[in-house]
Image 1 (cartoon, rainbow, N blue to C red):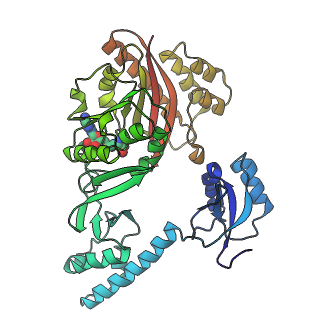
Image 2: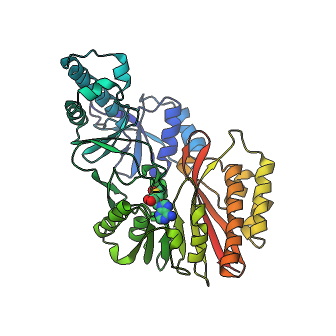
Length: 439
Ligand SMILES: C[S@@+](CC[C@H](N)C(=O)[O-])C[C@H]1O[C@@H](n2cnc3c(N)ncnc32)[C@H](O)[C@@H]1O
């Protein structure tokens, strides 16, 4: 029996939920006022605006948007408001509270002040971080500290901070300023891992969540991993806690991040299997120890490539996970260029069956899969010619570095290319998984 507070929804399997959600949102069918909900049978219910979703929509979802999925009409009982709609109502409350504060302070409310309020904010427990371009009008200064008290109580937090640009000091220190509260230490739980860090001293990139999940799904048992840019442990911890790496060497030169990293290793019971190397990773004296090296630095980790090559085990080699921001052309890639790039792969790896299969394939899709170039299903993005060109150049450069450093020829082979996120316009953060073996 349907209760009155239920709303219509389409239920589908978890793995197809994001694809279906995206399609329903584009078609204006998704009810964005409410959150998706996991149902008892492990499917996901996507709220929709009308109970009378045409059969055609279900057909399109099952056959073209998410082939293989099962989509049925259902209802969500007691739906939970979406983040978007609660942010919208908090924005209205914020405007009301601050308008009152301004007027009680003898000042005049204006539309310009309204535009100076935050449109969104990031919450870390009881701390809210506001965007950079907020509260810039001179009147706000006069209203401190009551202003920050009002902001904190309206947003339901105790501490308030404001974001600045991530600095280019090499530590990627965020210029976060604390506006209310004693310190900037926060806790963040991701995929069962606890991270603590000071938001005013270390960066936390929530945009890297897909890569953290991917690492968590690796099987690294028996492996030694080196994380060259460990930060507070964003990748080091998934390697230790979920991927089951035997040992991780974590390199980091920012003393504040090192503090947080040590604390997080203890918090997650992984300190015994990790050695922290504080300092510039290019000075690291280790070599020939790694089955896997993580190079999580953007816009480029190229300065760490020689170190990564030195670290790979001389006898067996291993895999490099190389992060890079790659710029691309807004136009669709030329298929001839795509094929040419894939065939050039052979230059680095003449014996590679994948390279040969890619050149023999006649569709872009089969060429991509032959080379293991794919993106997560939920956000499938065509592999761009520029990514391939960059990965080919990286594979060749690393083969040359390995020859020089190890004194014998090595084969480099593109295993996979992962799209982490896009920066507008036309810049993508990607990770290249490059297998490197002595021949
Ligand atoms: C992007 S941040 C953290 C990265 C984390 N892997 C992520 O993507 O969320 C990069 C980290 O590398 C550190 N770093 C940059 N260059 C370094 C170097 N040459 N040696 C050691 N640490 C370095 C910075 O201090 C920073 O904490």
